[in-house]
Structures are given as structure tokens and as C-alpha cells.
Image 1 (tube, rainbow, N blue to C red):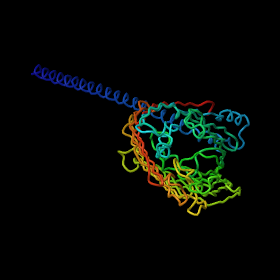
Image 2 (tube, helix red, strand yellow):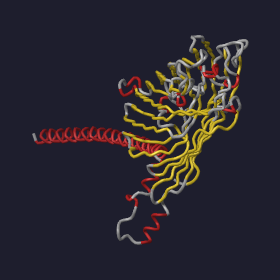
Image 3 (cartoon, one colour):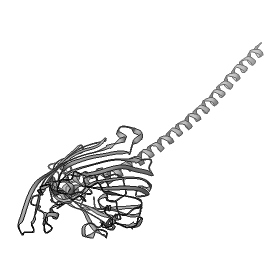
Image 4 (cartoon, one colour):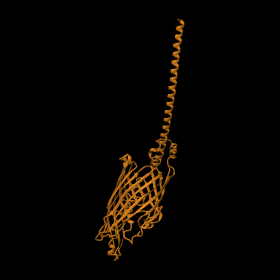
Length: 475
């Protein structure tokens, strides 16, 4: 009996030890699995932190690149000054860390390969201006057999933005030129100043975009001159900008006067008539702009004192002045603010109307002309444009649109006077990298004179564009 009890006891002890061993084995397996799972989680977390750090670094670099001017202003603002009572040594050390003057260099090289199915004034064959389309052939510049090939580098551009920090704020300057000769240099590849501008605080002076203009409405097209029905003039001026922030802009300027004069039928009556514009007073312009993620809306106005003076065939002199004015309303709508699928797209529109404002229009027309009684009057003008910039992908973009400039001719103008210019184009551009693009554009234009005679032109342009830029000095 004792032996039997002893055997039972040994069996119970063995079973217990066996169960305990299995349990420990199971626990060890679970522990190893848990440790492996924790290790995987830590590895994933480390990779995620690394990705976030890299993303943060790229964002910081982008902010530095896009916010150079704000960085300079902050460095010289009261926020960057040491607290009252801070040791002079600390002040000296801080001053040595402030950004110094620097220069941004930018520009691009562009080659335009153009085949014109018709013809235009040879001095303007590197772009399509409706006003340069021949109507009366033979006689007008550009008459001849249809078809012409042009290769041009005149759009190529070089510019410099300079920033000099001072105790009272930044001095900002801009000098930019391209190679598209105009005026007496029309048709030549030669330096043409676009911007020669300086600004300090609320005041600026030099040559830059007129306040009557909205440069942001120029579409993503590759023809040089662009829509005929938009206001486009870089003009010498003195400007005051009392309000400028991220949501609103208000500015006033006195700009260089200039007027296109059409002597019209007065020359038929007095062939010896000699008349020229009389620019006694500057033009007054103002601009109000509202901005946001949705785009911007701008209203601009101009007031002009237009004059003409000259000598009659009898030897008598004359002079006269008339009032000119205009209103220009423009809008750039970011379509992504309405539909997420259209992010990167823009709808561009603008309407301008006034009297004696053709000097500010992109193409065509005159400011002054004689009425039926041969008294100088300001010629009414209407212009408009509507364009859509499309971003298909990171590599592909397009732009399509139409523009028109109409002059309401007065009684004393000749029958050959400019009456209407129409302009349209569409393109598809490939951007292999953000700093370059290549692609074709179809361009069409039409001119109509006061007597309804007109002419048209169509062409294909393929452009090769390469950007460059960099910064010289400290920031």
C-alpha cells in the first residue's frame, strides 16, 4: 500500500513538472514574439521620424528660399534687438549674425522657332501683333508671298534683385532687361530695359509695371507680345504704397505721360500740318488689389491730361488739351480653391475701358485724333481678355484664350485707322524639370481698319526655355 501511494505521488509530481515546463516554453515563445513585434514597431517609428525630419528640412529650405525679404526685415526689426540692459558684448555678437546685403540673379535663355503661314511687318516677325498685320497690299510693311521662318533668341532675359538692410528698413532694387528691340531698334536683337526700379519703405521710383496694369493676367503663353486687349506698359513713375499686406494692396503713382496721335483727315485739308503730342502733366494712376488663396481681384484707374501742339501750313501755331481716363478690372481665379481636381489651374479675365488710354494698351490704337470738326479728342477704347491656364500634371501644362482691342473711331480719323485687333493662342508645354520647358503654340491674329478692311495671320511657334538663377552675398 505504501509503495502504491509513493508511485501515485511520483506520478503527480512528474505531471506537475511537465505542465510547468510546457507553460514556461509557451511563455518564452510569446515573450520572443512580443519582443520581435516591439522591435518592428520601434524600427517603423524610427523610419517615420526620419521621414518627418527630412520633410521638415525641405519645408524649412523652401521657406528660406521664398521668404528672403521677410527674413531680412525680421533681422532688422525691433524683434531682433536685444532686451534693454543686455550687455554690449551680446549686442555686438548679435549684429554680426544679421543678414547683410545680397543680390538675386535670375533669368532664362529662350529660343523661338516660328513658322508664319502668312506675313507681318518684318521688324516684328518674332512675335504676333495684330496692329502689324498688313492690310493694304502693296504698300503696307509685310506685304509679299505667304510663309516665313524665324529663329529668335530675343525673349532671353537677365535680371537682378538687390537687397540692402538699413536701420530704417530694406532698400530694394530691380534691374531687368531682355533682347527684344523696339522703337528705333525694332527687329534687332539688342538690350531692352524692362525694369529699373528702386524702393524704400512706402516709396518707389524708376521704371516698372504701370499701376494701371495687372501683370499677373499675362497668360502662360510663349508668344512674346501677348494679348492685344490687355493693359501692358512698363513706365517710369514715382509711387506711393500706403497699404501692403498679404490680403490687400493700395498704391498711387505719377507716371510718365505719352500719347499716340492720329492726325487723320486734318492732313488731307492741310498737308503741311505738323502736330505732336504735348505732354505737360504726368499721368495719375491708382491700384487696389484684394488677394487670398482663391486668387486676386484688382481695380485700377488712370487720369490723363492729353495735349497736342503744332504748326499749320500758314505758319500759325496751335495747342489744345483734352481729358483722358480709364478703368481696368482684372481677376485671377485659382480653380483649385473651388475644385480640388483643378489644383494648379487658373481662370484669367480682364476688361478695360476709357478715353485716350491706347498708350497703355498692349497693342494697337491711338490716344488722340481729330473729330469731324478737326478738334482734338480722346479716342474711346475697349479691351478684354479671357484665358485658362491648365496644369495637366507635374510635367505638362497648357494655356488657351482670346483677347480683343476695339477703338471707337472718331469722325476725323482716316479710313485706314486701326479699329480692332483680335488675338488667340493655345499651347501644350512639356516641363522635364521645373527649370526648363519645350513645346508648340498656335497663334492667330486679325486686324480690322475703320473702313472694315482687314487682314489675318496665323503661325506655329516652338520654344526652348532654360531658367537660371542664384544668390550672391549673405542673407
